[in-house]
Image 1 (spheres, rainbow, N blue to C red):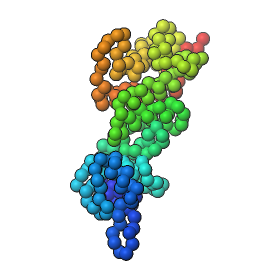
Image 2 (image 1 turned 45 degrees about the vertical axis):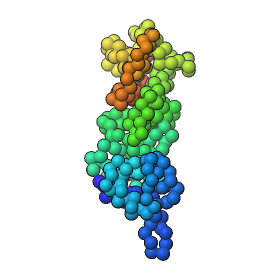
Image 3 (image 1 turned 90 degrees about the vertical axis):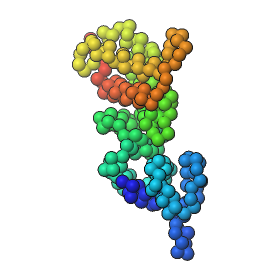
Length: 250
């Protein structure tokens, strides 16, 4: 995989210096990337490639920078995705909440497919879920932001089903409405117990990393917990948007 990634870096970060000299790293990219990786980077492109060749973490940071900040040729992104997959990389190319490309930790294909289906909506649910996914699985994770965005994404997906007349309804109010009259909603299975399961999953997203009711001790927000919350949010968004959880009809 490294030869493909190194070639990818060379194609996007170098510029000719003329007079038969080797290409240098484009100044704007070198300055910005140096700040991101918090270390000085070489002037000559070949020296940067040599450093990245011997430092996998630096190489991934540079590739992440390229996909995020550089204008990629349409043909290059699929080629990069194939190189990452064939190299059994832990990373894939995904998008953040602003629609910008970035490297993200590879997730189960079923969840990734549901995530991509939601992103195609290009609405507030998609934007918030992209922020949650990026915060949990990006190269520079922000676990608190990921969980906050997961809450908003689920709120936006569940409100039209549970409390359609209250655009300001929080996830807490949505959970209360389901708990107060669970018989008003059903799932594709038709089982009453499945609504209880949905409520439990909503509670995980809502209170999975905070404590309420006066308990002063917060739950430690680990990467594993944040990832579980985001995975759960993806499933809940899909269920509410697809009609798998719906209001009972008369």
